[in-house]
Each structure stands twice: as C-alpha cells, then as structure tokens.
Amino acid sequence: MREVGDSAASGAGAGDMSAEVMVAGGVPLRRNGDGSWSEPPYPAVCANGHELGPYRVTIGVSHCRCGILHRTAQCNQCGATYYLPRPTDRCESTALDGRHG
Ligand SMILES: [Zn+2]
Ligand SMILES: [Zn+2]
Image 1 (tube, rainbow, N blue to C red):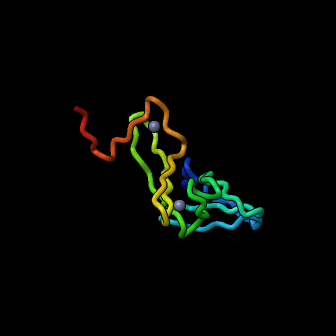
Image 2 (cartoon, rainbow, N blue to C red):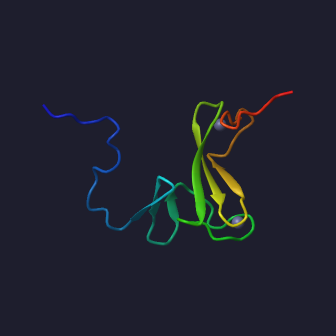
C-alpha cells in the first residue's frame, strides 16, 4: 500500500517544461511562455506602473472573514497592494486585528 495524498496537485506532474516555476516569498509562481503569470494572476504592473514579478512583489496571504485566504501582492517599490481574489463587501481581513468602533 502506498499513500497518495489527496492534495497532490502539485509536484507530481512532470514534463511541463513550457512553464517556468519560481518561488517568491514562499508562493510558487508559474510563468507562462509569454511572460505572464498564471498563478497568482497579478497585474503585469502595479497602479504606478512598476513591473510586477518575482522579487519585485511581496507575496502574502490575508485571512478573511469570507472564509478564504486572499493572496496579497505588494509592489516592492511603491507598496501598492493587491488582493486576490478581490475582496467583496463580505470580505474583511482578520489578520490585521482591526478595531471596530
Ligand atoms: Zn509600484
Ligand atoms: Zn474575503
């Protein structure tokens, strides 16, 4: 009997040489052949025009009331932060320990 994890969605595949996988901030980023990033789908540039990519963006996660972890990407140059998926009205970060008046 050999154990096969249910979450073996990554690492098991081989032969996908068309994609370049890098790790930035602990989150693997997969680079497509055209230079875009398939995961996470960050914008190519931040709101201030800085190119985003590995080592140009700080990757993180944000605990959210909606029950998922939003991935965060912060531009290293200007600090513009993106949340993926985009927060909705029901979303509220619980990691910031915000105070409600
Ligand atoms: Zn920027
Ligand atoms: Zn949320």
